[in-house]
Image 1: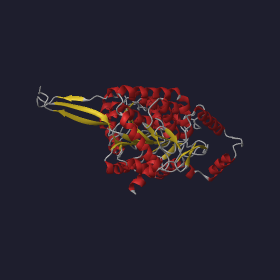
Image 2: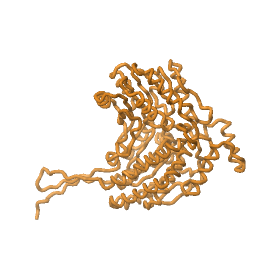
Image 3: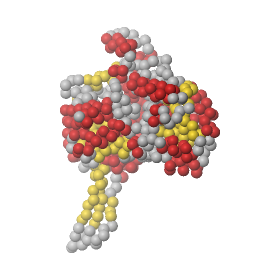
Image 4: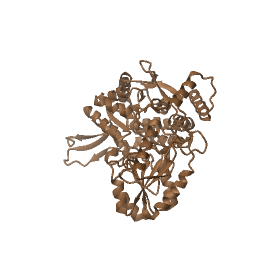
Length: 541
């Protein structure tokens, strides 16, 4: 029962549990039903027309897949069931995708296990060539993939293109790093012995990914897994499965053998139970909330799987008196409002020193005021919708709690006039550590401002959380930047910079923000076993 409960949470979205269709207002549901009943009715909203045109083009390109991928074959759910994928900007249904369960997942695991026997024996150079071809195809279809991300996830097209570059970068880096998985030779304590260290692939990997980066969170896991010789069963969020399926289609076109990449989606508890219970799955890699990550750890214990977890954050963004105001505002905007605030490294608490607090608050307000909100396909839009109604309700709850305890809204603080799940970019001041917004991950376009007096105060406030993923510091003092970076209990520290993620650097957290690292050469180790070989009697003729 525990495994079923944890998978129900982990695999439904990893951040928010409810499907948008369950939480849409009556008016929105009626609008969708009318659109579904008659395709001949004119679409009066420009957003709807754009979305429909994009979906049509994607379908004709062959990248709009709705079936799962098992053993190199596209497959419907065995019982024929489907689930709907919605456009968060309009509430409209984009596609019906296969709603798979335990039987399909077990078959995907079997396919991955069979493929592992041959894939793990291919040379590093061969795997590198396959990955390089996959990277080339991802980049060749950058525009279509970006449109697909905006369609199902809601982020602006500019940000979606950025995600394609970022996500494809993990495949390119993995292609290069595949040829650099080195072993070791250890000086032996006895003259007739030779000691070696080999690195070998861990085996079949279950990869559970969230909705906020529907391509990059997959490639960040699958790239190094394949480079090391592992095979994968991917479980994307049911909110954004279309990007995962498109990427899988391109992996087939790249010539990656059948069964090496598999994708299942649908019945979360059944899929999760199968991944956790199977002794053939030797590793679970997950991006999502800390609560779900803990339960995945527990569920993996029965078969003692390796586990990599990239979990929730509560990122501090510390602005010192000596910071360059323009640099601090620009960096904070990037760290806070990217993807409408829906990233695990978004600045969750903006901690500003007394001497610059008012200037910074005013400058940040002015900058946020100029942010255009709208459908991600529209020009000059800086912020799209939140993923679903549950996300909006969470933001509203956190703001209500903060204002009831003395925080002041200096900009925004309510739903946007566009309706649906659009929310106004918001700045609130006079926030303190007792408010929920300081203790919980916001995952929305809200910038809470806290005050501090001394460097010691800033470090104490920043570290006063169970999370330890991303953090940011703005100062012109080299000495202070070193002191604070070393004192922060976080896996990532950005100094005078708000966008720090890259495929060449390790990504992961301290404390309850996760285990292991993704990206860089360190991320490769997560998919490898270390084997020690001792050869004796080596002095005999």
